Amino acid sequence: TDFETILLERKGRVALVTLNRPKALNALNSQVLTDISAALDELEADEEIGAVVLTGSERAFAAGADIKEMQSKSYMDMYLADHFAGWDRLVAFRKPIIAAVAGYALGGGCELAMMCDLLIAADTAKFGQPEIKLGVIPGMGGSQRLTRAVGKAKAMDLILTGRNMDAEEAERAGLVSRIVPAAELVATALEVAATIASMSLPSVMIAKEAVNRSFETTLGEGLRFERRVFHSLFATADQKEGMAAFVEKRAANFGNR
Ligand code: HXC
Image (cartoon, rainbow, N blue to C red; front, side, top):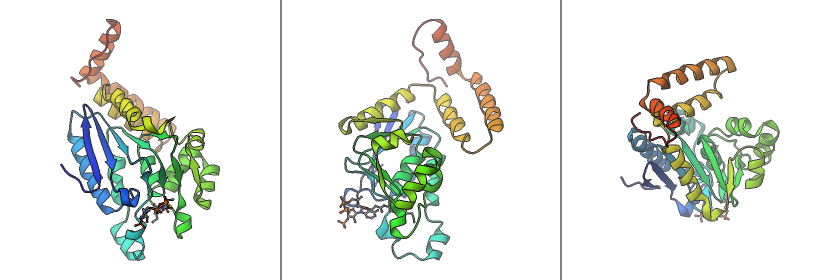
């Protein structure tokens, strides 16, 4: 399928989605959302795909929601359209998505990266929630996800002043899982994704669901959820294969599900 604002490539069991609005530093307009949603529908239904990498350009992962598209909207325009609600599609995607971030990840760009499951940053990455400088606040999850990721002190600092933080600060704060040289960013993210995609698909999908559940529920309910879904994996061929491979001292060959 061809998309207007993204590129979609399949590399074995991994899909690479590249934001492709270079003239607008990958600002997220409604077409980007339409394209990403369609790509995710396709990738979720595809049994061959085990993980996804989402990236931008060297200069910008995404410089935010498209300010020019929002500029003249009224309250009722935003409220009736439930502007930004469509991004829930990405949050509902059940396979792992790795955000590979180089350059600017600002506003909606930072929020998009935080909707992903893990975040790998180039040493050039700059994260921020500059919406306060536009007379608004984060609207795609920044006040909630950034606060959970880095804690109240740093979230308040970033969201109230609109300043950027570099990759080092983002890693220290726990927002990103690793920093790599910019030239190795996409290759590293694809390697991590390939490792994930080589595991049992139901295990991977259920592991993602279980970790995400921890953000939505109490510890007791989360532990019960984990135990139930852990038990359910004993219904899979991949569990038999994984444990047999360990006992027989050989590599596991997952895929019978
Ligand atoms: C629309 C954008 C854009 C954006 C950049 N561009 N960011 N267009 N929406 N968010 C466009 C510019 O208008 C310009 O187009 C082109 O991309 C290149 O950008 P420059 O500003 O010329 O580049 P540079 O000087 O290198 O500065 C890069 C930058 C700056 C620091 C990232 O572009 C910037 O501050 N962008 C806005 C960042 C931001 O505020 N993001 C939050 C958006 S609000 P032209 O055609 O002029 O050459 C948001 C959530 C909203 O995300 C939630 C509340 C509703």
